[in-house]
Amino acid sequence: MASGGSAIRGSRVGAGPMGEQDRGFHADRVKVSYWDALGNETIRYFAANLPEEEIPDVIDSPQSGLPAGRDKENPPSVAKLEPYKTHLAYVKERRTDEEAEALLEEALQQLRIRRGKLTATN
Image (cartoon, rainbow, N blue to C red; front, side, top):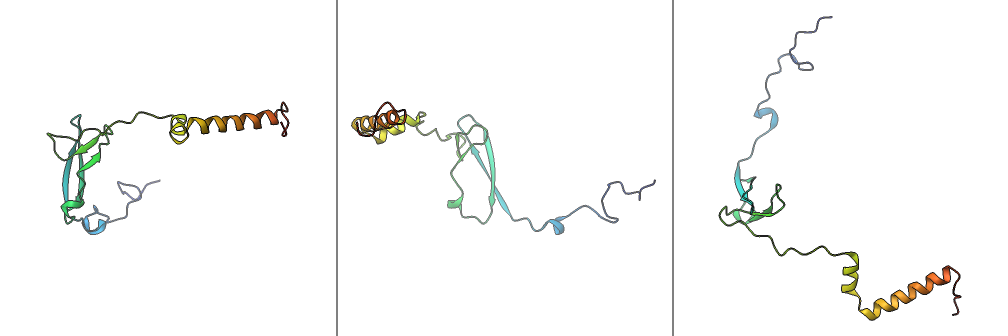
């Protein structure tokens, strides 16, 4: 079975390369480079008519996750790294030792009642 002779299946006869008239108008844009502390460059494009104050001075670098700035010689440093906190550490920030003791005693009493080792009246 012979095909219609089209080099690309599914293309229409007479179909040419798509030009700007098919894709729409391309807005003017400006290229802004950002650098992180490791020297990685990240390029972002912004609309040319965007006011300068709306273009961010610092972004997160997709390569390293570090902050990246527009000054290649002085990239932004990492803000103070906060150590990982466990759930218990957050709870200790919200509760005093006395509150924690009272909550623990209440939870233990309820557990003992459930297990039948203590009656609700004790």
